[in-house]
Image 1 (tube, helix red, strand yellow):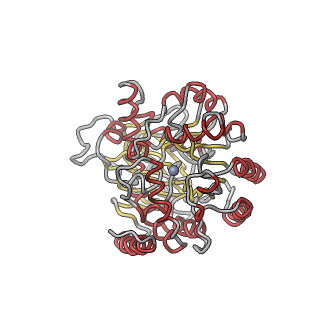
Image 2 (cartoon, protein in one colour):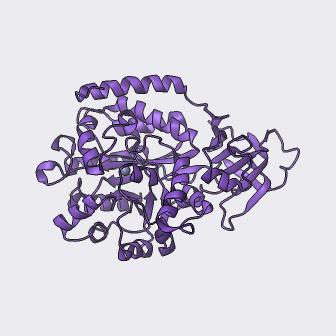
Image 3 (cartoon, protein in one colour):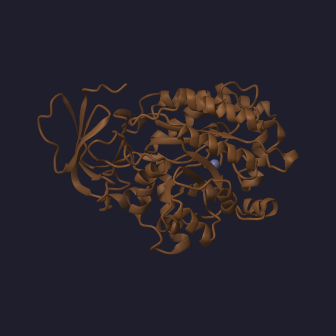
Length: 459
Ligand code: ZN
């Protein structure tokens, strides 16, 4: 745990604050006491701070810790499958494998995924877990345990599916739940795990999976439950043309019109993907201040398309970045989402489509806004929680790039000199300090083999 008396001064680094004025310091400092940032400014850190550990951060860039707004941690043990398929083909291959998960496998997969996320600068992550086999034990508690061990700030979403194939949905019947069971378990997850405190390390959201795996009744009742408890709501939407076709055939409208009807837009909702949106849908998401988790790597891996991130931001929607599941984004890197957000936006919309600073903004304060935590995380300011990434930019990969934000967004991933979460060092000199990475790798290999053999998959 963080010692409330400990002070750390990051001294002599470039600082990109992402505060309201978007202040940057070419040589600056960040001072942390306990789990809070106490000073940020230009020039060297004040001398003689009592009991302070001074870190020579010259050659480095300090940014807010990155915030991952969409993920599926359990998929870490099923990566690389259906490598050349569409979303619906990929899901159809993987659903039967995922039917075999249990709490042990999920704890191992989540530990692997969270450990790698930390290596890529992530300090806060969501998770959207929607597969709950009847004999699998408490898989939700298993991922909560993994996040506590690795040390990331965690926003797990209690997902669900209740529309099996026999009723017109995409998932096989054996991995969907009964609606009442979903609602009971979701309330229990909130009661047991959700912490609304201002420096919370864990907040739960309510997250039926998608229009093609969930009934409208569940979407409506889940929204009532979430709003009654004062927690956020999350789902997948407008990811593929197949989903658009599904909604038009089953509901006679677009995906956005469908969820709008069911009360699923607003400043307490965020949607994963938001790719296939017409102009009226973009305006509606902006007018309702709905959040969008832009997941460029997964969307490209599945050939789903490219989110209109610039148009959504201009319309007033809150936009963050997301890795999405490890099985549709095998690199599982939040840093890479910054890189790809810039490149893909420009490939689609020309050189002015997205700046390097816009992309870093989406990964930091933008993600904080999506999770309703812009008052606590997402920028480097006195009073905010001490979630800080310190990137080393004086090595061969970046040393000649004058603009540190361009170096971060356009170059290779820089070594991570230090990653603080709630004031605690989770990464030091590019190594995770909280778990043994080699041991985690061995456990992941064993869990993956066990799960695939349960499903009868040879490899
Ligand atoms: Zn997803």
